[in-house]
Image (tube, rainbow, N blue to C red; front, top):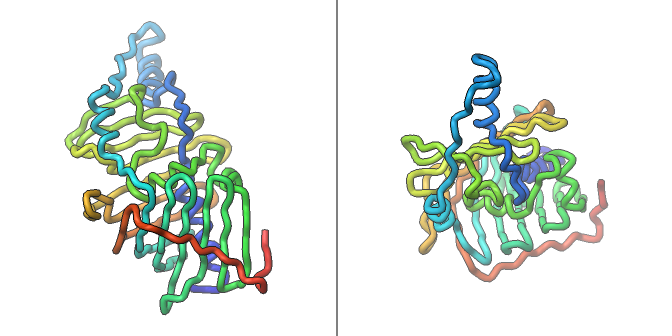
Length: 278
């Protein structure tokens, strides 16, 4: 791994995982499917045309989806990750630890198992140690907003890692359509249009988001396979594709080991010789 690349990989990976994440407040008055139908119908037959009613998620469907969400206090995992950032490929190993609602700890190792970077994320801050450059960076969590907009949510990042639905996107106001693989939920959140693909077993299979704010962004997160961890079922692989006018990022993450609700430590000591960079 080239000098300084581990810091860039880790930061961009975190930004990608957080991009287009959602706050809990939904804008339920405008669904993307409804908007599209209205526009197309008016164009063809004028403003007097009737718009078909949009089906919404039922209480039973909502309860079934909520029942499949993974509940945990702590989570730890090891994963192999193939990352392509603007055409540059890197194969790394990620060690991930989560204390629900409080901390996300990530260690990135590359050749020979040597750690290149370490991050500690809280709802308030992002801290990164770059061991290759002997540098340390600390930013407020809101720093991500410069890249991902103001919809970033710490809980959404936790949920993405374990394959839960993202906060606020699944409610009885979600538009729903059945398909052969399960359900497709859709809606609008501020400047974000989203679709959630729910499998027949009511687990999240794919999330697609499109932001048309000041900077256009598209994000697809797809879950493949399963890993049984005690009485919980975790996605075995997470494929993340994020594109904008500034960058194109692909992350293929495959879990090799995972545990829930074990005692974890979150070591993050910055050596005194490390310099602070912005």
